[in-house]
Amino acid sequence: MAKAINFGLIYGISPKSLMEYAENNYGIDISLKDAEQFHRRFFEVYSAFKNWHDRVKQELFKKHSLTVYTLLGRKMVVHRFTEAVNFPVQGTGSDMLKMAVVFFGKLKKDVDAGIVNLVHDEIVVETSEADAQKVKDILSESMLRAGKIILKKVPVKFEAEIVDTWAEK
Image 1 (tube, rainbow, N blue to C red):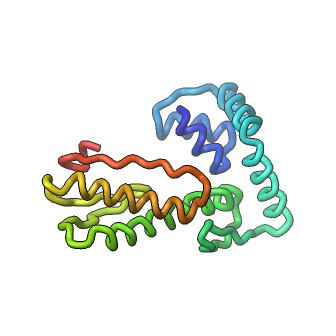
Image 2 (image 1 turned 135 degrees about the vertical axis):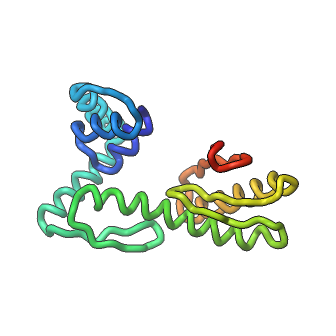
């Protein structure tokens, strides 16, 4: 439920959309009244998000389009509120993922491991069982470095797991 609320509200969904998002994506049934309460309380606690959302809405109302940026300066022209608040966050996450991939390639040196897939915010790596822990440590270091460069003082949190198949994750 927390994930539905946090991500949904950060990306600008309304209480009604939050209710539908929680049901459709997480199988959680909440009433419109509860969604409205979550919405109100979230923005009371995280007033900086409320202020940012209000500024974006005002600018879009005046200009009908905005140029928004990731923390690395990648830009996108948007016409809708949800795009305007989604791209800077999602795009920055994408920038971090790509930077972690570059670090991984440099740090793994002669270890026989290869990135086989990138899915949203996940990096899937294949290696031998013997090298699995070493590769996990290299991937963790890669993600940590990318996060520290882009996020500066914001704590970097991630999970890295060793599994036999991606289906086990």
